[in-house]
Length: 104
Image (cartoon, rainbow, N blue to C red):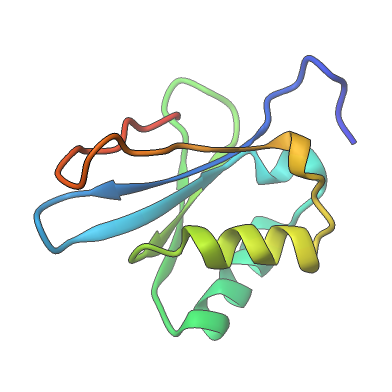
């Protein structure tokens, strides 16, 4: 596990238009998670596209999963990867038309 001042696992859902949504996950590599393997598990578990993108202006990558997959990602991190709850940060939206702020 990383030091207490390290970044948390972060994930959120983002709207690109009214019907286009993606789930963004960052900082997986800080916890020893192979991002490519995690993307493959997401693709097979929910039959959705998953891509790995470099984070701008920071070291590391972010995973982008097609659709609102926050619940699946959360369960996968907890059940398969044993990521403790205190190290995960989830963004909440204030109303149904708000765009999630990207934590990345």
